Image (cartoon, rainbow, N blue to C red; front, side, top):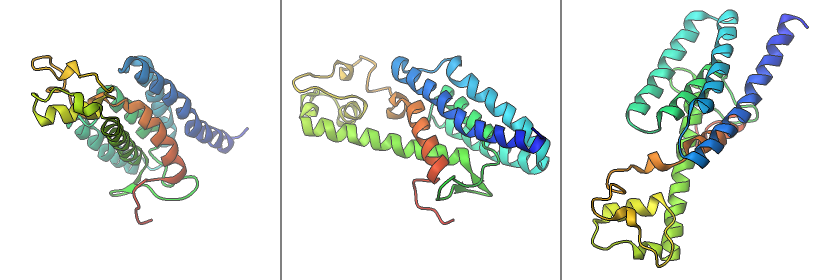
Length: 217
């Protein structure tokens, strides 16, 4: 097997293997509602390996500017608490793995700033999917009538956040919304969403179809 065949084989590997790694991270996030080193380290190591091969076979300066732009944006979004540190490290791994990926496998296109960016499109799609899940949870609570059982003495904002965060059973009031409980008053909606699951779903969607938002090619 010559060098070109090895690179082609690794390209297929780095495209498909993250699905397994992200699936493991998603399961951990669903079970523990947090990510430890076993969730983000494998995809990060895969990204470093892919980047090493990328630098050996492409223009170093162009790759450097791509990484600086994307990693800066990912870091800014972390500071804005759009996702957690574990999710951010997973996204860094995705960024390093797909720094040169410019188009989906089937159709569509990626989010483009100065160049088409795979990892930022993954994050955009993940946010859209997570917001959809939050909205569906709210509609389910409204339809079931469970929201009416939340403490009326609490401010509307707290009761609304509770409806977004959890499925409320009929006839069961949320103790987390009680005053001074440290529940809904201090927690953000995005922090309670199992983001690794949506990153997994978004990775597959982005790989095949690009951005969920209609973008010009």
